[in-house]
Length: 196
Length: 244
Image (cartoon, rainbow over all chains, first blue to last red; front, side):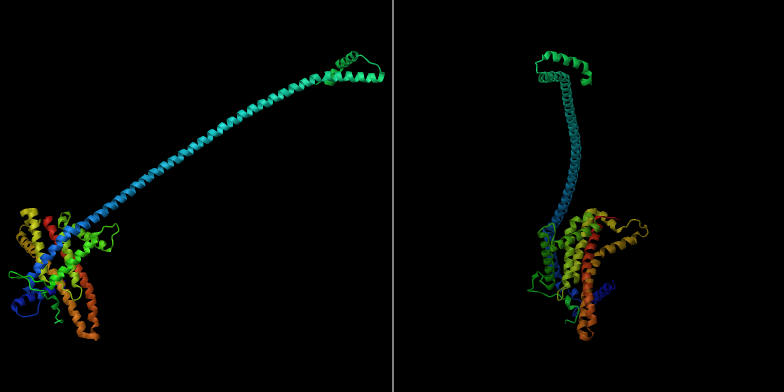
């Protein structure tokens, strides 16, 4: 500031002294009006051209560049936002699908287990029935065999007795008499040999 | 001749003498540096505006940063109404800045160190702003000279002061820039002269000063261009948004 006032002082001093000693050389060339008109002319011309070229050609370009970049960045941000939302929705869908399929698989597993258990039970029952049948059949057979056994034994006893008698006595003995004796014995001792 | 710190401000003719009527409009070293500065502005900003990439290169970044800097300066001081005058203020700021900066190169001529140049710019701004004010507000623009909330007794005095302050705007605007540039350059020249006259023995001190002054003058060159532009914005603000 002091500098400024100092040189303003010089300026006015020279300005007034100039008018007094106009012919004297030196002083401030700024106050020599010889080229003032030239400077005004060239300043107007050059600054005018500069202004016109800048305002009509260059500044609109810079401005549009800036706008374009701004809008592009805005667009990119919007697109990014949208994509993020989309991905969030997708993620939710994915989660839903996962949980649903988990549930499905659980259900499926349970169903299959039940089915299998049922099938196993049915098979078990049929098998048990079969086994029971077989056992009953076997029991019946055994009973039959047990019922038939005395007759066979009697017959064997009759034949054996007749053979023994034939060999011992040497004469044929009527089988019917022997069988009568065996039947008699059998009847007498039935409970003793075949009792339960 | 070189010892005189004022010789650097001398204007001389380059090429033939050109006359229109009685007026000498010869091409001078001042005209040369106006042309050089303007060409530099045009080349730099044309390169910066040429291709638009998402990631700007250095020159494009420079152009865009300057654009946003000036645009922000205008919107901060004069509001959104000043948008149509953006190109003018941008050109003005760049022209003054480049003229100042070219003046910092040794052996060049500083266009803005001439009162006639700064005065023409300031006068153009003053007249333009006044016309804009009258177009926007009609005779209501004269309310600028009558601040609100002033006692009636003081009013005649205040109005006179306001008118004087308004009329001295072009002078203060032009002298501020011109005096700063001239003072800085003269001072540098004086210190440069000291370096020569004191020689290798005592010349180091003024040399140090000279180096420091160069830094300071570069700052001043930018600052004065900024002040010139921002004052234009403030005057424009007065004309566009009448607050009084």
